[in-house]
Length: 367
Image (cartoon, rainbow, N blue to C red; front, side, top):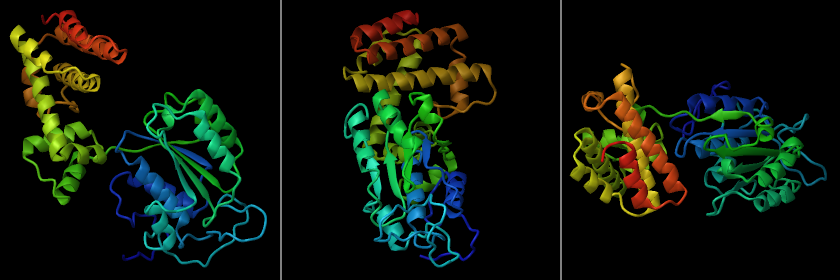
């Protein structure tokens, strides 16, 4: 791996795609010892939250970081956040280099000082997991000068778990860094938000995602590629998932059902509607996915009737969406959108699926 020699180069030696400004900012903060004790990395699944967290951890672990402290056997605490760090020789190399042992262990997930806390298949992240974190806080790092806790799905922490974490966020040991990964911050307590800056991952452009997929031999027909890009919504992780042959087959089938339903609504063809709804199935998660797609489709149709510039969330061609939107009145689309959202809520609350879908069609005036 070739390394640049510009001391002020806070670039991207690991070749990570996306979130360039965020990576540069955090790398610069690491280099200048200006990190906060905690950060909230907010973004959709597949938007690079885990990648950013690994990048920060590798930058801290990198042997080429100026001021990196070396664990010593003597008593007493040391850490990245101490006032008087024990310096290592100045190297003027970018961090993380990705080649040294410190970087390698972090990137391979084997660093003893990077701890990942997850839900372990549960719906929420409970207080017991956070209590275990607190119990281990005052055990000094093994190899690094920093002990890093990456808390996944932080938005699913119960109020009790958040309150338990708050005690650690307020007065952490000098060698601890918390990275809270979340998909939306609305479920985090204000006390948590007030003690950790919120940094948002940014969606990638369709062009960047298309290039990445093609470079990874995910060559698709133009129409399928557009469907993947729409579904990915700026997330390269989601794009990789959707472009898998099995996933792509499923999403094209789902889109076919939604297209049939929309056209049935447009032309008041009850037989088409009934047939489409019957194929929604009986699995709750599958029905919710279809209703979410339907909601995006109706949203697109509403917007193209009212605005000249629209970022489509379902349709791949604005001309086709506009032509289809002309077959509806604005009022009928609003009724359909409201009915779909209501159906999503009912399905989430375990209401009968078949009755809910029938009621959705009746409420929208399409049956």
